[in-house]
Amino acid sequence: GVGGSERPVDRCHIGIDSLVEDAVAVMDDAGLDRAPTIGWSMGVNTQFELATLHPDRVSGLFAMAGVPGATFSTMLEPTHLPAPVRRGLAVGTTRVARLLGPAISTVAQALPITPRTISVLGRTGFMFPIEDRDNAAVAVREFLTTPFDWYFHLALHAARHQRVSLSTIDVPAMFAITVEPIDALPRIVVAKG
Image 1: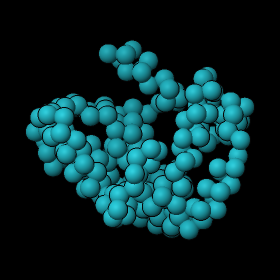
Image 2 (image 1 turned 45 degrees about the vertical axis):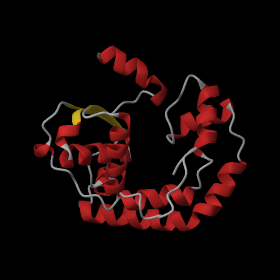
Image 3 (image 1 turned 90 degrees about the vertical axis):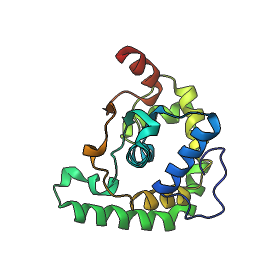
Image 4 (image 1 turned 60 degrees about the vertical axis):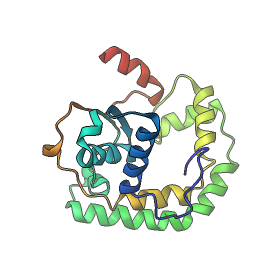
């Protein structure tokens, strides 16, 4: 339901379990019995759940910028607050943000997204500095086509997903946390071979 894809008719059909069902359906449609997976953010939750529920379908995991479940318990880690408190704060903030989503979308969509905007965003901590500001501007404009309340709705559904036990995973897995911008991913993957 982001970018150019349609949102599901059933707004509740977006939990990690639903995404795993979708992944299996896509693999079946493509005739793939088994494949390595790459997940980013919620995709990390999805791929680890897929590997847990359908271990015969996953040959490897490459996880970027995410954790295998209990995502909201990992937020605010530098505060050293107990995980349940951090989770409660993160979920509460996301609920408020979802209510404010239409206003946030209106303001964000009115902003001129130019290479200069990308340069400024790269200095704020909102995103890493990116060399190819023209393509980054295109990507940010695309990101802004999805209403923010929908993004927060997705996040709240992801928050329901519990931690996946890594002891059940029996395939190669790599976690990538990088200070490189996402447009460097092809270079990183090729370099790591």
